[in-house]
Length: 113
Length: 394
Image (cartoon, rainbow over all chains, first blue to last red; front, side, top):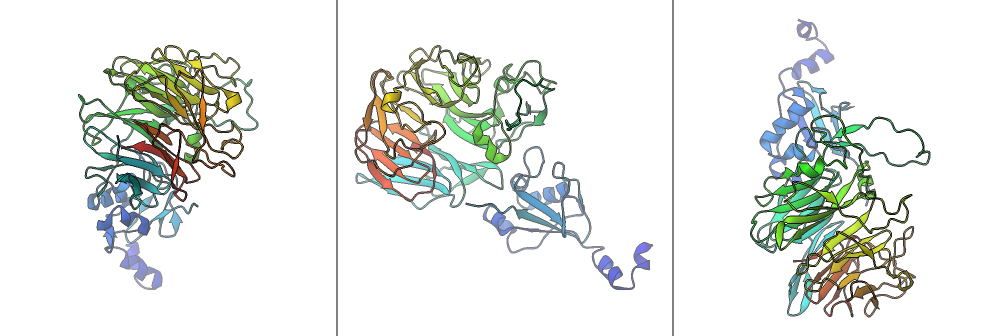
């Protein structure tokens, strides 16, 4: 298997360390105001699409995804998501995949006043 | 007489309580969150605030303990299949003579919950909400669940039933500049008037389309814009294309309706079947956003005039309130207690209210003024509030 071939060396060790780790979700502190249950804890979800990961967070904090996406499931205009350091491309259906070991970051756009 | 005033402001909800004849503001609620409308449901005392989150989407917030605690609700949503024709924001190279293409459609999502209206005493739990992009929502359980009024959403003036397919008629509704903050140019419902005599009878106002009336509880709707001459349109008497800024009616005489818009102040004494322009430009009464009508006398109304339309601020640096007691035949300006120099305030469409002999208004400059003698003299309740979006007595 490719994983076994990569087990030696730095890349392989990183790959393996993430192999069985569920993705983590990290978010702007602003959201803790509305969902205090999410503060001071590690949030994990099964690997899957961004939409699926957000639904998993909804299980922990009902109503959470209403703050991130609109009723059509599209990402709200002033919210950005990234998977590790890659900005999510599909803002409409949130189909980008969050793999094992990755972190989904939820940012708010900086806007003034 | 009311003992509470609610302000919706750019930075939260401000509640004043009248204590020993003095109006005292509480610490701000929803601190830091824009609140575009706040009101109290007199039937059960529930307080409501419409949160206009810049990031997290519109939410209603509800307090059932007089404002001690609030519960945010995400329950107001467009149903699956709700679509609207996309409005294109006019651009400098827009050519009105160019042939129009096929309409573009968009799945509907709520951008703004612009105002709320409460049902009659015989309809506990009935609440109406007007939104951008132009949907009227109804709740019969105090806001826990909401239903889109489909006859209005599917109205021929919006292209027909887009749940079923493509447009079957021409869209007559235009966008409101208030939608541009959301990156769109879509219509909005900012006024909902329920007839106290008959809860099936209602008027709504849409920017930019006009006034519509239903007499059957929202099953059918028709335009009620006759007489609202629209100076800037090729046809000033067009049925659609109006931009009422706010529409209200006298609770004791519901056939007396008033509206303020770009082209003047308009009054109807026949339930909006016909409107009459009652501006008095030489007295400064012409352009503005809010309008309030007396609870008992449908001929008595108040406006806070502004310099039209490219300035949108107090006229010649002096702030005043104008009152008519004869259906707009004459207007009297009241300035006592209001700044008469270096004032650049503008009062937005929900920024003026009346309760008995008391009136209150707030401006985007953060000034709040109160009158306890029917608008004749004013006292300042504060100069340092956030920009005020709405003022409602509780």
